[in-house]
Image (cartoon, rainbow, N blue to C red; front, side, top):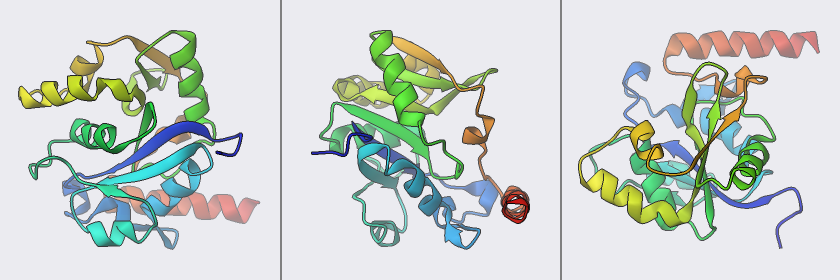
Length: 205
């Protein structure tokens, strides 16, 4: 049985992008405060869910060393987060799949719980985070039964997340109280800035 605090959800950490702004380096493996970025994401997600998988298209053995199953996109064209979600929906055994990116190391501890509560409350098929200004579509809880719908959408050549979301019952979940959840690291400058911020926070404790 899962610990009571863990929901029956499979989390898919999206680490399958090209990371062009990071100079092509695999963002999940870029170190932040002495640990690969994905290690921060794993530490935040593992207490929240029953299972964690990593979606990656490069460095598969290095990602597997973190102890989670690694699933690659169905093709090698780096088609974006929907392709990663599709891979996760196909591999998951739970009815619900959570997505989170590998470059947001400050994930809040109740991300899954809040998305799950909204999904059930609104009888939705997808719950997606809203930061107070815009949707944050890579932070979403999706019913696994939508796997065929997403595969067909991608097979038709479509890539836009919001257009696929619009085909299904959608709950927008307000996370405007925790903007740190959406802080991401796209390039070396952002990495250095976040490291400095975290170091300053540690010194103040």
